[in-house]
Each structure stands twice: as structure tokens, then as C-alpha cells.
Amino acid sequence: MFASPFPDVMIPEATLYEYLFDSLGNAEQDRVALVDGTTGAETSYGELVAHIDAVAGWLAAHDAGPGTTIGLYCPNVPAFAVAFHAILRAGAVVTTVNTLYTAEELSGQLADAGASWIFTLSPLLGKAEPAASAAGIPPGRLVVLDGGTEGAAVGHPSLADALGAGLPAPDIKIDPHAPAVIPYSSGTSGTPKGVMLSQYNLVANVAQSSALFRVAPDDVVLAVLPFFHMYGLTVLLNIALGERARLVTMPKFDLAEFLRITQDHHCTYLFIAPPIAVALAKHPIVDHYDLSSVRTVLSGAAPLDGELGHAVESRLGCVVRQGYGMTELSPVSHAIPRSGAEHVPLDSVGYTVPNTECKLLDITSEAEIPLPDDGESERGQLLVRGPQVMLGYLNRPDATAATIDPDGFLRTGDVATVTADGVVRIVDRLKELIKHKGYQIAPAELEALLLSHPGIADAAVIGVPADDGDEVPKAFVVRQAGAQLGDEDVMAFVAEHAAPFKRVRFVEFVDAVPKSASGKILRRELRARNNG
Image (cartoon, rainbow, N blue to C red):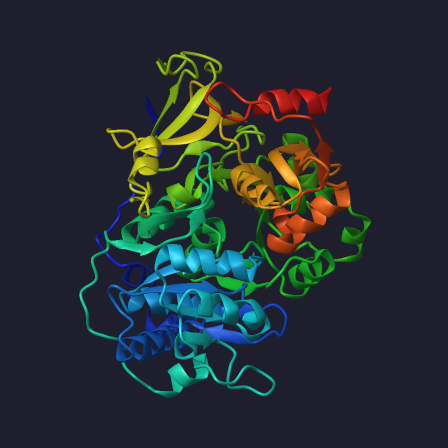
């Protein structure tokens, strides 16, 4: 077992609102907290807290408090921050939803999480309204954050309605250890499951991560990674607000717009995923923008190649760092510190964050692998224990027990090594997840969808390398007897029923899907076939 080389940080028994905003002083009221990168509209810290309190009061007046779960289906705009923190301030639970989800996928998550409200934006109403209806949510509980303005949705309550009511935040006691946020993750395998995180989990991970990321009040942080993902929620939204930095929101990634916002708003700290690093290192359009304000780039959500990271450093004249985590860890467990870490290899994920212990287990025997006296350890599955570990999976006790051992260590499903001085390197993964542009794709979910097609007898999905070094889904399909089914038919079917990032990019028709005696798909054989 090995622990963080950094001293423990203090983690108070507080709600996230108390931790982030109770210390807001008079001198900080007029500091800019949020900037809409598209319009340039600014929200001060004082305005942000006032809006959070007002929306929390409005929710409480409509009996949306403890015991209520609210879906948040919204891209990165300043209103996301208001809605998210207001829901928690009211004592309710929030389940964040991927904005690329179809109405079918959205309704499935709302139903599984037990949501009785949903917050969204008018451009997403085409999916939000049918999803809410399918989940039994009435129009009066579908809040359109930009409603009530010219050209925006009518017939639903809006953020303007909640603010206009002028109600005080409720005076209630909130248990910081109770479930508060339920993002969805496929974990180490299988279909998406609700990850129960407490406010204490989130407070802890902000405190732990801040010690290494060192976001400062004079930083301008670009929020392109989605807030509905725990990486964006903790590392961008909550850490930036807690450190009183300026957070510039971007609702969706577009390279030219990303570069424009970075240039025009003089962004200093960029949190990205590896596909953005590829663009920053190689795309010719980068040379048309002044990115001299950028001091630090931190990559997460998928492994970053060391040479690629150094190429970004060289081109932008900045420092590049890498972090690691997963939704079930709120999400950060490892990172290369922003400063004083020039000796740490960029293809590693750095050190274990404070207040956290880890161990490596032999993949075959599950015996613990000792910390080496020198050099790098043997490879083993990485397990993590700390205050950021989730409470468990919603309504999935078996999956929880399979993921968190009796001693409180969470099995990450990733294979790692550790050096004598505690530097961790992720070298492989046991889990079957496909990671595409920072998103997780569960093969089992796509396989279930494919099997619903009348012309498909059997199917299996694996991740295969794309030209840009990312990973994309490939389907191995067994046709039903007599079915006239081509590659385009299969890909179009998936595209119709799944979010864009889940779409199958390659199809191979096979006579049979290789399986073990117990019926488990032998993905190693499929990978070997694909590589052959």
C-alpha cells in the first residue's frame, strides 16, 4: 500500500455551498465569477450566490427539497452553475445528464434516478419534453433556464420566474454525507449506473485536488469540458469558484471558437482531454491565434501521450500536466502538480492526491504488489481509498460490492505501476469501456441496442484505434438468416438511437461471436482478429 506524499488537507463537515461560498468576503462580491464565452455576459460572485439562494428558495416553496431528485440536462452556460448549486442548497439531489443523450436515453436516466423535476435549456426541449413525459414529469416541473425571454420556450417555469419570486433560501439542515449528486458511469464494465456522491465527497475532492492543481484567483479558466461530467463539475466549476477564479464557459467544443475564447478572454488555465491536445499540437489554425496568456494545460479523462504533451508545451510555451480519476472517485485520485513537478514524467498521472491511499493487486493472484525500493513496480490493478470514494451505485448493491472491497478500497479496473517515490503510471485497463473523446462508451449498452434490430442475430462491440489516436466503437455483427443488412444499415440504426459519441464507426460481419462457456464475449479474440 502507498499513500499520497503530500500532507493531508482539512476536510470540513460542510455542505458544498458552505465550503465554497460561506467565506465570500465583501471585497470579493464584485469579482467576476462566470463569463458566458459566447456572449461575453458576466456574473459576479455576489450575483451568483444571490441567484443560487433565490432559486433554492423557489424550489423549497414548490416542495422540491430533501427527498427530491432533479435532472440537470444543460450544456456549459453560467445558468448551469446557478441550477446545480441551487438544487444542492435546497437539499435536493441532482442527476447530471449528458447533453448529447437522445430523448430515449434521457428518459431512461431520469426514471432510473427517480427524478421528478428536470432543468434544461430551450434548444434541448425537443428531447427534454418527450423524455420528461415518458418519465412522468409534468410540464410545471420542467424548468427552462432561458425561458421567459424573447424567442425562448413558453409554458414552463424559467430561471427568471425563480429569481423574480424573490424567496429566501430555505433554513434546513442538510446531511453532507447523504447522496447529493448522481452522475452516471459504466464503472469498470456493464451499462451505465447511477454513482451516488455525497456533498462531503465533493467537498473532499475539491480540497484534495486544489492542493495539486493550484488554481489561483488571478487565473482565467476555460470551461470547455462538460459540467455534467465529474471532471468538469469538480475540477472546472467547483475548484474555480472555490479559488475565486474567473470561469469562462463554452457550451460545446469547436476548435476555432475554443481558440478565439482563449485569446479574447486571456485564458491562463486550460483543462482539456487528449483529442484537444492533438489539435493544439498539430492543427495549423492554432497559429492564427494569440495564446500567450496560457500558462498551464491539464489533460484528463483519457491517457495523454508524453510526446504529445511536450509538443503542446513547445507550441504554446506553457506547462502541460496530466491527472487521473473516475466518476466513482468524485473524480480525482492522481495528478501531476502544477508547480514543482518538472521531474515527473508527463506520460504518468503523477502522485496520489492528499488524504488518499492506494494499492496495486496482481492481475492473476490479486496479491498485493509491494512498493519498489527503486525504479518501477510490477503491473497491477489500481485500488483507491479516500474520502472521495463514492457511497455506492444507486439501487445496485451487487455492483457496489464488486467495486468497493470490505476495507473501503475502490477497484478502478485500470492497470498501473508505481515508482519508489510514488509516481503512478496507467499502463492498461481491465475494464471493457471504450473511451472516445473523453466520453465513456459501454460495449454492453451498444450490444443491447444492436440486438434489438430484427436483422441482427448476435453482436459484440470493441474499441479500435482511430486515425487521430482516439478510440471508436467497432461492431461485430451476426446477421439473421436471410437478412439483407449492410455496414451503413447498422451504423444508421445505432445513430438513430444513441448519442453521437456512441455511434459505431466500423462494422464487420461474422458467422459467430466468440464466447466462453459461461456466455461471456471473448473480446480479446475480437481484438486479435481486428489487429490481424
